[in-house]
Length: 142
Image (cartoon, rainbow, N blue to C red; front, side, top):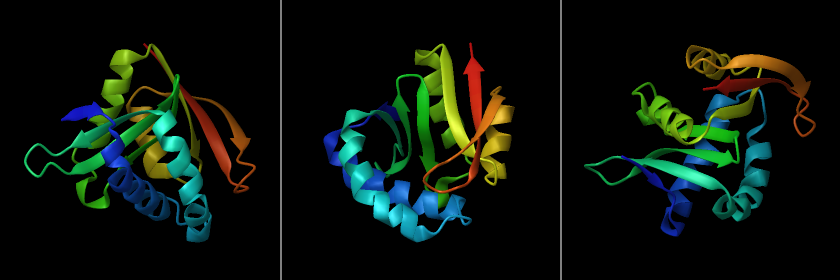
């Protein structure tokens, strides 16, 4: 089930954010993600967030964070990946937005393939000033 983020979700969402970033970005030091943990935790309640909650266990398995038409990220627990949760979260965003944009690290090939499969196109490339890593800017239009 996909639902809007509630204040009580913060700890589960932040744990997924941290673990998923460390796992998906082995080319970036885990210290980077840990040092940004509290900054993100402060910003999170101000973003448009939708969580995927397992109907039976009532546990959050993943979430998508939006800032207007920009996808800040799609995060799914490692144990719940490759089960269609990321696609469901993305489809939810596509239902409520006519255009979506995002940045993805070029070394994150799994994510790039996912977005290409979901009809995003690479618009440009740039450098993440915080990590020094190259990124693609990708766009989807209805």
